[in-house]
Length: 136
Length: 202
Image (cartoon, rainbow over all chains, first blue to last red; front, side, top):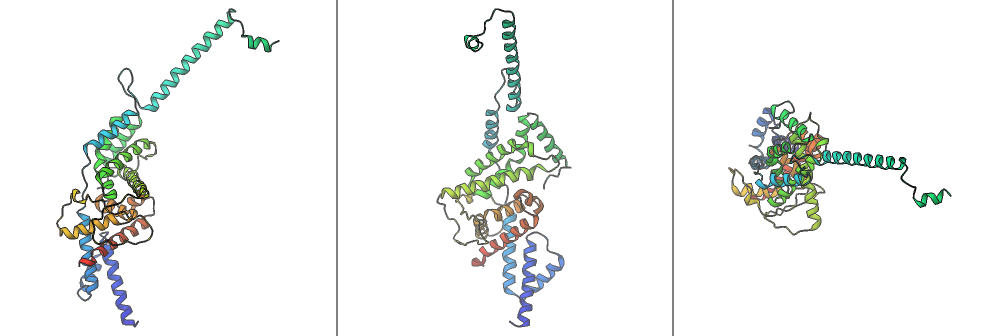
């Protein structure tokens, strides 16, 4: 391949780089002028430029699609299913409600243990046979 | 335009997230309303099917709710939720491919996008239901959109996030978990492949 052909390839490579930069809106005015000049002489690069413009036009017409109304309902229904309503009607997140349940259970447990201890201390309760047996 | 953390919308997003963390599920409903079109649209463009997109979008919002503790209020909310949505869509596509469900071919070009390893998902045929403000020739637009649907997932994701959602490559890089230059290179390769799809008709 001669020097002229190599130079032509370099020019087309530069044109291709400029065309690819168009996709990001980052082509400089200098590159635009270079492209406009080059494509007048190079059918292949002119074709690539035309195709990139059409691709960018098609991509630019890609619009958001409105979400279906049911989407919000479905998401919230799922989240509400994970959040059970309190007896008083006020809803709390599951994790916070879980802490409240544990706190309540702990309180009840303490009360029961205290009642058992008081009962035994008052002397009316005998250790069960199993323990008595181990005490000899 | 993306909402920065310093914009009014960005501050409102941060306030809503904080309310969510305090147990206010209605605040999350507000966030869903704000971003459901973006999330759903990305899912539609990635899956090519409205019903599947609805499933993906729902899954994405539920994951977002469950992951609110990981959201950094100093960063914009939209790229964060779109990251979840894009990953949910890609995961969905992988599961779909593994089920080997036969797809409808709507593109007659049948081009192999090449570009290396990756999933090639043919469009499932509901493209006519997806609205486009088509000012270019319908045939050309159809070829480009069919080729877009046939790109490997990461390439398609970059184009959808950049051209439809207007995200910068820096934001796209965060969404996809890759360096910025990688996201930009994927975008360039993707557009080059779309250009190739028009070669036969021009």
